[in-house]
Amino acid sequence: MPAGQPPVRRAKGWSDPAFARVASVIHLVAGLVFPPNRQPSAESGMRRAMTSLALADADALARAVQVPGEARDTVLAELTVGETYFFREPAQLDLLGTHVLPPLRDRRDENRPLRVWSAGCASGEEPYTIAILLRELGWTNPVRILGTDVARPRLDAARRARYTRWSLRGASQERVARWFERRGTQFQLDPAVRDAVEFAQLNLIADEYPSPESRTVMQDVVLCRNVLIYFDMAGVERIASRLLASLAPDGWLLLGASDPPLAGLVPCEVVMLPGGMAYRRADRPGASAAPRAVVSPAPATRWWMSPAIELPATADDSPFHWLEDDAPVVPAAPDVAGVAAVADMAVPADEARAAYLAADYPRAESLAAAALEADAGRVDQWVLLVRAIANQGRLRDADQECVRALDLHRLSPELHYLHATLLREAGQHREAANAARRALYLDPRFVMAHLLLGDVHAHLGDTARAARAFENARTELAAVPPGGAIPAADGVPPERLRHVAEQRLGGLRAAERR
Image 1 (cartoon, helix red, strand yellow):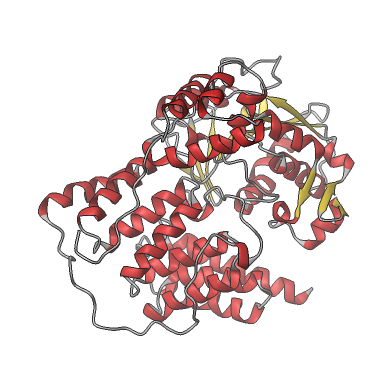
Image 2 (cartoon, one colour):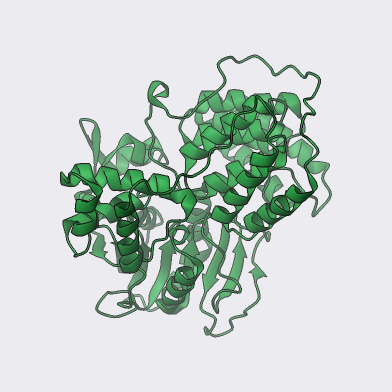
């Protein structure tokens, strides 16, 4: 590594063999995997469990998790990211409301209930969102909504149905006022919505489903979003096969943007929709094994929809970083030291890109870190490292690496854009706007930065600036030929991005008319 440049953060592994024994038990009973890059964060979760359980050392924790009970449940709750929020991933919710649910209602006996299963429901925000959405759509047929999770403490919280403002950040003020009663700093869900959802503990790696006993058969919609990222590919294959088998013949399976794609892994029909990929049973009548585009074929966007980690709502307490001033980045003579990678580093760099494209984010992270340890001048590998970490849901770690990269490469528009996106995910919208403007100062034609800046201004209530940003994005996209590549778009085609910009503008204009 060139002198004077900071070292790349590397995972240190387990600090005590007892933590490795805990991880082995959790892998055995729940299928969760802990590659080296995840071991430090997993150990932090185990230490939090020790504090909660009043255990003195890691050996005591390793003994306690050997049997089912409070200790194992507490560890499971700490080792999976349980943070979620109401009306998360609105594109998928739009897909449900416009494409999935209407045909299900039109084709069935009015006495047959609609069955929706939220697998890995955490503290209940997702299944409750579905219950609210169905009421807003005027659904009058019977409905059975099931939420399951491996962690009992989260299910207890889901049944209480009391949430903080952070869990409601994806819901409009109108929705909050309609469906929640404020009680101090918490919000109590409408009892009718709460009673519409049943909760049960279920281990996705186990053999107990699909079955009538677990109420997981003949499901019309199964949502398992940002859950499969915790399993190795053998576990993903096993769970995906069971989820597909849980579907009714005309049912739909929706995964999260960060989850690995199922095409080529298990028999299924892949449907490309505006909200991303959806899956159906391969043996359903009229199914096709090949992906079919219903509207605007596009791969599921990944990293900017990664599972978020609950963060403080105030800037003073935020673990995320931003540049101190709002001054433009002044171009200077580029730092060319170390730009030419040594020949033997081309292999891990190429392998890192291949691993990222294959959605093997832990391997992509490891390979990118190795390439950067030899040559920190590789901006492309810094970008890949930040994206790979963020796609695993470790947004704090991604932010730290992004700030480290910007210390070395302040003239990289894509790094400023990634920083802006991380700040937005942390709820730091004004700082995100500043970072997006830095990206656009360096590259005024950066479409993704225009779109992000528009979203941030819209969130801040500055509709004029938001509209201007979306117009700029649409103008730049108009010059891109069909099928052209858009920097930092992660493969999303320009046609889809134009549709996004036009939808955003339409929404702003509709709001102004109201």
